[in-house]
Length: 164
Image 1 (cartoon, rainbow, N blue to C red):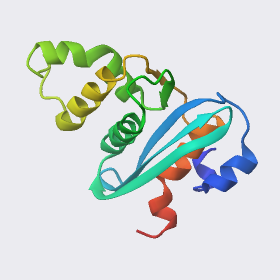
Image 2: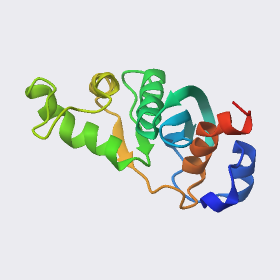
Image 3: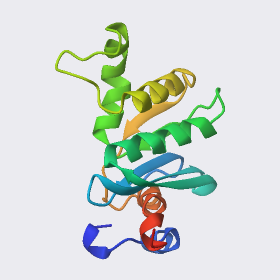
């Protein structure tokens, strides 16, 4: 979905999109005016069927915080022995957990170039990822028509359609 299409509902996404992975957990975060009001959402699908979906809202936040929150909520839903891919369209979040957090933890949660933004969320997500050793966190391109990534976006933007 291009942003010029407006904010689709989850049902509209299902009618318009069919490409992309058919199983996994898809997460997304959204923020209007960044910082501003925002939302997060995730959907867990197996064989193209929804198992779990959730979304939430924050009145004053940032896009990165909502991306992190979506991942946190998704990991909290998964059993510790889950063997699944979790998809995020935030390269920052994926790289944070897959590449950078281990080094930051070894240095006492410090970066060479300055403080870590959203440190409390990064720590929580990194711990949850560690508690799910068989879960693979992967990047997926945003707004390229992948059905379940678009669906997660629709969940993350629910607050806009509800007029919050």
